[in-house]
Amino acid sequence: MPRPRKASDEDVFAATARAMMRLGPGELTLAEIASEAGLTAGALVQRFGSKRELLLRLSAGAVEGNAAFIRGLRAKHRSPLAVLRAYAECLADLAASPAALARNLAYLQIDLTDPDFRKHLLAQAKATRMAMAELLVDAVAEGEVTRDADPRELARVIETTLSGSLLTWAIYRDGAAARWLRDDLDAVLAPYLSKRRRR
Image (cartoon, rainbow, N blue to C red):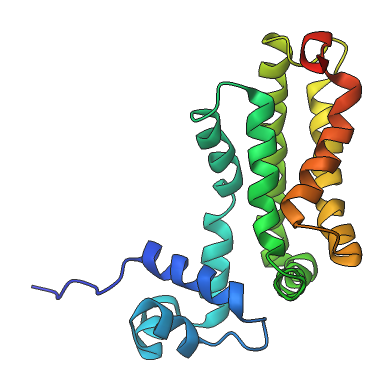
């Protein structure tokens, strides 16, 4: 009977994500990931083949991650706009510090330039935008947002705003990143708020 694995693939992916939060691409090694996961580097090679393959598996698994996270937030908040604001605050975790954001941007550079990683990034972005559009459809239906708002177009603008907001926060470093993103999100939403929400 085979011995049970000490850590599931999900445990390894979680450990990898934690390691990536403190180490840049050049510092991230299978040994660091293995230490975080409580395994040996050899065990990771046996299971995934290489660091690249492990990161690709993590990237593939993240395709629905943001969208599922947004839908999970929807179950916790009565207001669709409150969900968007909560998501913006969670996104700000990528910028826990300027150095943390720089590390995340280094991984993004790989996602943008390596075709195998980019296909997962694109799928994740599309799924996330769709989840935001679903929230905005709900916001219109519930009277939080005016009926002349196009949920798909507004989701695109919000997606663009939040991505840019992370970068501008890193430049200005004025207060917490979460507050910076919330303020930018509110500025985008302001023209579309129903009179009831403005009051």
